[in-house]
Amino acid sequence: MNCVPQDQQLSVHAALAGKRILITGSTGFLAKVVLEKLIRTVPDIGRIILLIRAADGAGARTRFEREVATSSVFERLRAERPLFLQHFLAERVECITGAVTEPGFGLQTQAFGALARRVDLVINAAASVNFREALDVALSINALSVRHIAELARLARAPLIQVSTCYVNGYHKGDMHETIVAPARGTIARHPEGHFDLENLLQRLAHRIGQVKAETSEPGRLARRLTELGIAEAKYYGWNDTYTFTKWMGEQLAMHHMRGGALTIVRPSIIESTLQEPAPGWIEGVKVADAILMAYARGKTSFFPAKAGAVVDIIPADMVANAITLAAAEALATPAAQRIYQCSTGSSNPISVGGVIDRFQTEAKRNWRNYERLFYRAPKHDFTVVSRPAFLLMLRASGAAAALWSGARRVLGAGPSPALEMVRTTRLLAVTFSFYTAPQYRFHNTRLMALAARFGVDDLRRYPVDTRVIDWTDYLCRIHMTGLNRYALRPRPVNGAAMLTAHAAPRPVAEPPAAAVETRQ
Image (cartoon, rainbow, N blue to C red; front, top):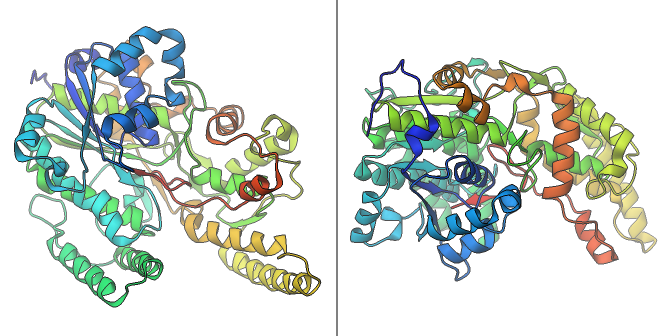
């Protein structure tokens, strides 16, 4: 590894050219943006190795061709350099069938060692971003798998870029900086090297999971009990949900198992569509704000618990990919160190919850016809933000009225009341997302901006991370809503059966908070 002094200017191309980079989670939204960015902007990168688990009888290469290579994230490259893209994907993208949740990724010892010998850098973007995942599943993917990834990085003597989330800060309040986070509630012993020692916690959680599995055999009930256990444990230690709790554990395990090797933790806030590249508004799946927006657009909700004046932290996906790229270049070029960077807007270009809602609602009323996949008709009601006590009263009153009306409809031979579905959707969205719409802290990205300052003008133009360039009205309305309509949503159904499916409530989960269940392995 060619090391440069800490104060010397860095270069993405100089650091990454010829290097072999292993990426996990490549079937997910963020990793696709990173992959496209590396291929397009560092064309002489040595090789990109994708670890993809087998699924439905398909190995890694088959899944790559089916789920990644065909993605619209490559539309720009297909239009501008089709032969280059074809040759790169065929010749310099290597797909390894393996699972991050298995020791050695499930590979033979010899194959694991051979893989380590051809890796210069590891980017771990694998995650379950379901806020209400069963605890055993979330632990396996978001936390325990980091031990296996760190083992590869150590064997390869390669830096590890661990993609986390700003929301590992849990129930803390105030200014959140790029430092190791302590639990906001329960007590967990601190390791002499600074991170938290999870040995006792992991043993305790494994015991609790074993108890639940021994007591419950019915699959549906078992999944519910393990989900409830995850939420209860998360709240006990100071996190809102299983996702953020297990991602925090992933950070601690990365620090522990890298054993002083080069480790960079990159924490994005709420990742939404791209600002500029590869195309403005590119997105895959429905994320946090989008689940609520879709429910409003389809007439499924009109009020929500939130703090209108609180700062909500949204970050475009390409800015996160840029931060990961800069962090990768630094990790390869400078001596081994432990670093933490936050990709966020709250401290440099804040926008309030009310500001987001006002922009979405204004655009919806004026131009709803421009978003034919999102809005099936003009919005009938305003979207109202209320305090949590007021929300609970409104929900209780709406639920009682809807239940009475639904009962009367059944007596008359009609179907359930649509109002009852609205109440259920509103309650589900609130249970899943209300923590993120009533934030009590602000994320700072001082260290990320200091890192950016070490790169030249060309790199800063190519990999911008300064969120002050975001015009929120332009981004949320012109860019994001257009992208959501074009990339994330299917064309409007034309028959009655499909219409019923399309009107179902969105499934609420997260990236670092997202609204469609996405397990990236």
